[in-house]
Amino acid sequence: MSLWAVFVTGLVAGGASCAAVQGGLLAGVVARRRGAEPARVSASSRRRPPPRRQPPVATRADDCVPVAGFLAGKLVSHVILGAALGALGSAVELGFEARAVLEIAVGVVMVLLAAELLGVPGLRRVVPQPPASWGRLVRRSGRWGGALGPAVLGLATVLIPCGVTLSMEFLAVASGSPLSGAAVMAAFVVGTSPLFAALGYAARRSSAALRGRLAVLAGVAVLVAGLISVNSGLTLRGSSFTLSSWWHSLSGGAAAAPAAAAGPVGPVGADGVQQLVITVRPRSYTPAHLAARAGVPTRLVFHSAGATGCTSAVVFPSLGVERMLPANGDTVVDVGTLRAGTHRYSCAMGMYGGTIEAQP
Amino acid sequence: MTGDNGLVVAVGGMHCASCGLLVDEVVEELPGVASATTDVRAGRTVVRPTVDGGATLDPAQVVDAIRDLGYAASTVEDDDTRGPWS
Image (cartoon, rainbow over all chains, first blue to last red; front, side, top):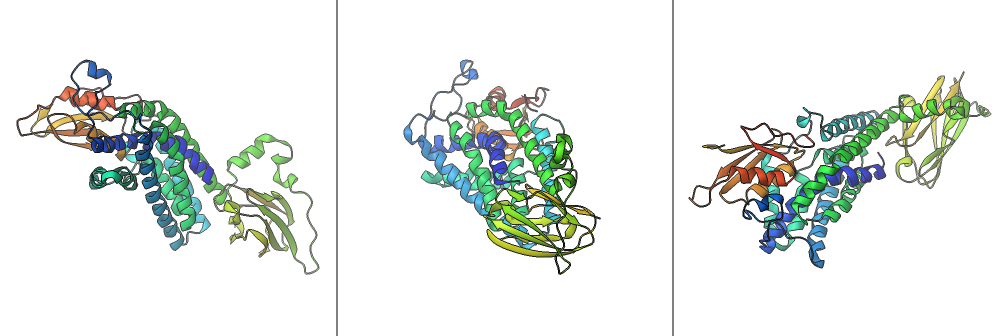
């Protein structure tokens, strides 16, 4: 999944399923700090006297401070965790096959989470729950922090991930580097921020009402994110059962057959080696479809033209080739003799790719 | 009902640990409540009353407080735990 997809997942799903609830926890911390005892505003207050504290409505300009502190704490702890998870993925040297399987597994888990959010019964146990002691630690954390309570609470929320957050943590492992892992978690937490900031901690009841309305939307968003993750994993494995392949099949014309779109087969050099040049840009490999001769020694030349981000790591599952590419310059890879057929390739996250059609 | 083991409330619509913490947080603010412990996976909250002879635990108040958060809630005798998303 790209960082944008992670951000949007946080924006819709994370905000609805995590931030809205944690807004209620933040409300408690702020109310205790102020010692406020405002009147209850719920419907049941008309039936009986105010029985408990209700957090104050955020009307003062400085009410944004606790929210900002909470989000900053949450961002810091999640970025650190993301870096650690990325380092873990790096330490175990996940190959592209393992990363592909991890992405597919994450996608399947997200689809199950989506089903649970959408009301499919019997899926509650899909989401691992943290130990109860961690929950108690989170509740105490906001009280320990004094004026910094919201920030400390935000830091501590890393201990109580929801299912969507857990999925992002798996993606951080799959990213295979501390920087990428940190970026995944940062994109997710930043994505949850707008909804959280909009909700603030005005009232737990408003958070609950919004969460109820957004539950279906969150479920759909998680479902889409899960399918994207599965698709990325399949693309990474070089599978022909990807959304891209289906789109090519459905769209007709030249795109329907990569072989037809691949153009003419290039000449074989005087040294008996055919050379295939692929230009690598931040969001594309060009040409996306190349024709080649099967049974001929082949050299791939990746011409990087500002290749940053996902496309800078390219994977050819069928050729067993995986390379990190520089932002600019050429990278030469001898891949031996091509067998006839379609050789799919993609970036390391399975977001961008293309094919080489080796013709007999 | 409120027995020796406290009041048991079935809660529907919880998706994560934060939901459980929020329920505990709100229920423990009610008069007559010493502690609340929510098991998200089991979908229930156990509420223990205070023993100092002060305020009395009101089961209806507990259920109302949880429902105010947007979750379905009922004491265990009832069968009204289905919320809009459970």
